[in-house]
Image 1: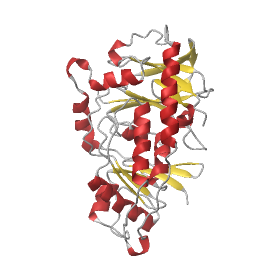
Image 2: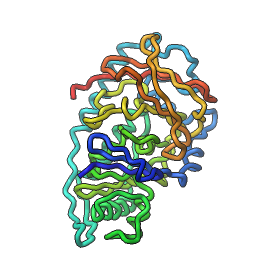
Image 3: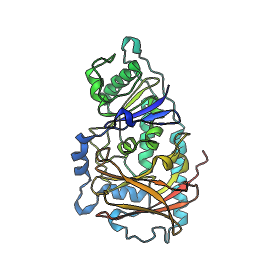
Image 4: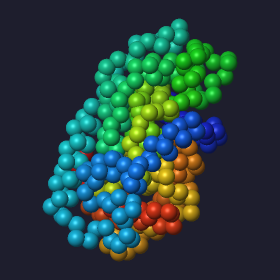
Length: 348
């Protein structure tokens, strides 16, 4: 079985196949207004800025970045302490990858249940990556999960993943059809899908990743069979309010988090910066290491995939390396963005 991801909005022809994996991503226009309103806070910042500052003390809020080297005068001891905390969380949460065994049956259109610990472990992986990005956790919603389970049944019964479900499909249900249009879709069980979404290799919009890191995400629904899964992400009520979010994120990040699948990593798929309030369409990104510019190829990310605006960029002639700190500056936008990515090894 070819592993696939599908996120609303891309055509079947846009599916990217890498190392036996196909991925497609979903546009959530329905949540754009909500996402934008959630990030507008008095004084230009929201509570999420304090949240990010606490997690990544070396990262500056967007309107405090001055274009100078953010690494200057960094507290090495503080960074080591933060890296230790990040690795501790990474190792602890990555120990919980058990999927659980689906109780349904596609041949008789029984959605069944995806029992514990599958849903909990999927949520754990979502929140692990949001933690690394300086975002608050989300919770599971029982109704969304039930709909996502109906969605996963349809995908399994028809051995395919689609957002717009044909009337000819087996095991078609109103709940499943609705969830298919509001979910990231994968031809893997739910827990395994999160690493695929966070790499998002071959998906030009980086839409799966952007939904997981969205200000508006949550609560979410998860549904899975033993081979297909649906992650209900659109229509959230989250209010993280981050002015911008990056992946890889500011501060220490495990190298393993950037290589979630063996055949590709974030370097191949693209680094990303997303925002609901900062227009990045005319922005330019620069990456440096110790003052030396590292070439990148950048592109504008389509609007509506978990954020109003987005920018993607891939390394040209270099690869993300453990022990190296990368300084990223985004210029040409209404608010300049600058941050440091400190890549650390966590022994995995």
